[in-house]
Structure formats: C-alpha cells, structure tokens
Length: 265
Image 1 (cartoon, rainbow, N blue to C red):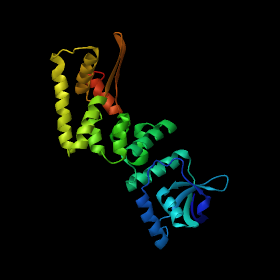
Image 2: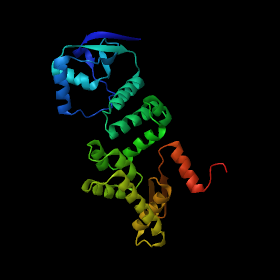
Image 3: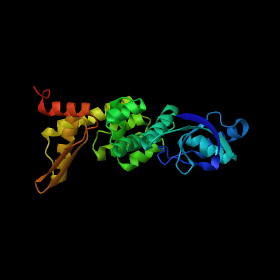
C-alpha cells in the first residue's frame, strides 16, 4: 500500500541502511537554496514505524537539504518495506542517480549479501545489474585500504582499479603510485599489467634468493596464469594456498585453467 502525506520533517528519522556515506557541503548548499525557492519537487519515500514516526527509505540528500533550508513540513510517499527492501530501495535510488562512489556501491552490495544471505545473482536482479558487474565491484573491497580511500575520493577511477585488482597487493600499490603520478588511460594500464604478468611467467626460469622471494615468485606465476588474486601462507614448509574468485563464472574459469579441461570431462 502506497499513499501521499504531508508530514512534519522532525517526525522523519534517517535511513540506517543508507549506503551513501558522503554528502558534499557545496552540493547540499545548492540543493537547499533550490528547495527554499521551489520546494521539494520529488517527495521523500518513507515507511511508517509502530511509534508513529517515519523512517526514510529514499531521498536522503533531499531530506538533509530540506532541514538545511528550514522546512518544517514535507510531502512524503508512505510505503511498507522491510529492512531488505529499505536497503535495496536506497541503493537503487543512488545507483540510478549515480550518487554512490564505487566503494560505497560495493559495500552496499556486500551488505545485501551478508545481512540478507543473498547470492551475487540475487543482488544483481534486485539492483538491475549483471552478476559479473557485482563480482567486479566486490573485488574492490579486497584492495589495500590506501587504494580504496583513493577510489572513494575520486583520485583513482573504478576502471583503473578493476585492472589492477587481480595483482598481488605489493604490485597493486606500485601501480597505484604510478597512476597517481601519470595520466595513464585504462587501456595503457591494461597493457602494463599484461606485461607484468608476462614478466612473472618468464621468471619461472629464474632462481629466487630467499624464502620470501620464492613465495613471491610462485605467487606471481600463479596470478599470471590464473588472472586472479592468490595468497600463499607458508609455515616451515607447510601452509595454505588461497585462490580468490568473485563469481561462479570466475570459479569455473579458474578450475578449468587448473585442470586443463572442462569440469566433468
């Protein structure tokens, strides 16, 4: 059931499931000035709580700007929604408006999966994306915090980040510093990453000088061959080998690469 109401702005609580974390002061100032002159042209979307108060579902930016503009009443669309729907609707609105940075978007996808036990395919269906695009977004959260912060701040594009995401952490950071210093296109970055993987593969004929070099050497070989992140945890000659994948399709590709054939052949 959906209905339109005029309600007190003070009776609306912010959405705790709001995926957007950053709101620029200049952006809010401009919107607040527009609201002062023209009002809110698009109603907020809320759900009514048992206490009689309302919780915001969509329209966080308009909600904040309305407060800043000094409004006391606003028009809202009231609809019923559980926690999953509140997060989904807030996420969809921000994606459609392109308001989320890539890290905020990836964190929201992850939150949908973890808190509501959804698969990548189910998240993709809810937000109108493909499953590979969800997988690629989630890979950004495995990158070093320094790189994630740069993506969040707009210093590193999502396209560049995706290219270097499959490299070892040390290589990611080296490429990151190079990208900050020079004006490299995504295609140029792809070529540089490809050359590094070829170099790692060619290094199979070389000898490593110590144990750490040997592990880096093997990790580089595996990552170059499998085109995904690999971790080696060595403890006195025994340990764990971890191969990362970010979608069912990528898992199938990695297994096929390791076995040298399709599963079941």
